[in-house]
Length: 129
Image 1 (cartoon, rainbow, N blue to C red):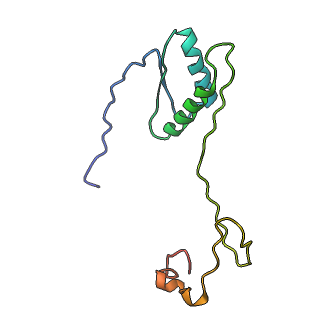
Image 2 (cartoon, helix red, strand yellow):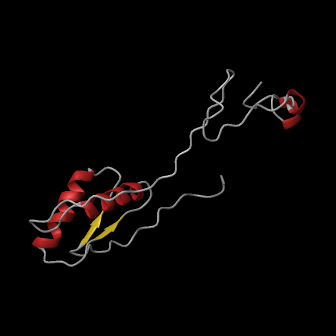
């Protein structure tokens, strides 16, 4: 790559539409939310377009999810939704655990336990040495 020179290509500046918000990773979420919720009644707009790139994408999704929960007209009640998120919890223990717990798996018999070397672990640069 030392035979190449880095050249920055100029970007076309595209105008921002009235109903468009460009989210950056440095901007504060509450400012975007306040601005977005004020756009609908003030600019008499039926839609808001939020745009983001790179690291700002996660922030934009969070902003949209929060805006969806806010009432956009006076007199409306806050909307509360329930999301179901997958969670896993695994306990590895040297001590005996509650065998009646959901998902309990007994320890392997000693004759089925293999040394780490058989799995390619334990060498230089591996997590177990």
